[in-house]
Amino acid sequence: MSETTLRRSGWVMSALFALFMFGASALPKLAGMAVAQDTMTALGWPDAPLILIGCMEVGFTLLFLYPSTALLGAVLMMGLLGGALATNLHAHAGLYSHTLFTVYLGTFMWTALWCRDPRIRAVFPYAR
Image 1 (cartoon, rainbow, N blue to C red):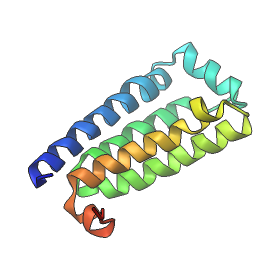
Image 2 (tube, rainbow, N blue to C red):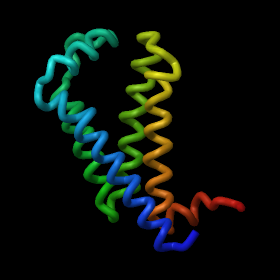
Image 3 (cartoon, rainbow, N blue to C red):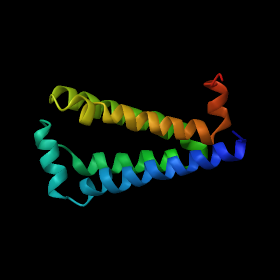
């Protein structure tokens, strides 16, 4: 696969990741939607700081999208996703549908970064 195709694929994947994070994850928290509070209550966090979590999601996603800070954004986002994974494990949420979703999402994010940044590919080479 050519360098141009890899970069374009990485940016498309990054855009899809960002759209999900902004629209499906951060927006309900920042807009005060009942679904966000209900979900956190069901997970055992009835007094969760939804605004703070939503701001972190937006901030980390923006860091991930900006090329100079993409690695920092990815690392911080993985910390956030790790907390979500631990919360789902603690709440005995469905393994493949809820708990491992953060692993799927993190893998997608890192694959996007790997595709769009040759420096990441140099650290994690893919042998054919």
